[in-house]
Image (cartoon, rainbow, N blue to C red; front, side, top):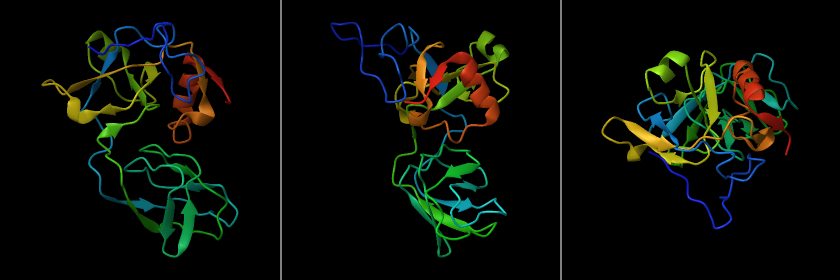
Amino acid sequence: MAKLTFTDFGQASSAAFMGDFGDREHILAGGAQLDSTAAFPGTEGNYTITVNDAAAAAGDTALGVVALPVSIPAGTTLDFGGEFATIATTAAAAATSLVVEPLGEAIADASTATYDSLVDTNVVPAGTLVGRTNAQRLAGDPFGPAADADDEVYIMVHDVDLKNANEDDRVDIELVRHGSLIKYNFLPSWAGSSSGLKTKLYAAYQIIKG
């Protein structure tokens, strides 16, 4: 199982989105496990990003898209056939809206851009939302990508490499304990999360702006 390593002061360093020390009071003791075969981003490569926004005008800071096949980091510029959009906040895989720098010009609906992923997308990043239903919990199933139908939703503390999965296709992870302080503007999965998942996060954590 996953384990925690503490300093002599009983606390570990924490990610930017955590408003509390990364100690046993704010990280679930004993860790948890993730299903490495679940619908997380696959291998690195080229991905097509498609606009799904009939009203994307110059100056807009949000751009609707077809569910992203992979996470896209902040600072990435996408070329939609000569019309450009720069990602302002890291977008999670499956996100349907991008937070962008003010668009210089309108971008037509159904326009496409090619995103060349330069990172190992076998790594699920810290801050990813994971979840499962009560039935899955009682069955001892591992966590998968968080969904609106999940009864329990948690935030991952550290990056996890899916290549480290065991023979049961499970990989150890550590989760932020419910009730902890979370700075939503530093949480990479926040912008791309559905309103349903955000409601679950508000109920489970103390959500603030950092």
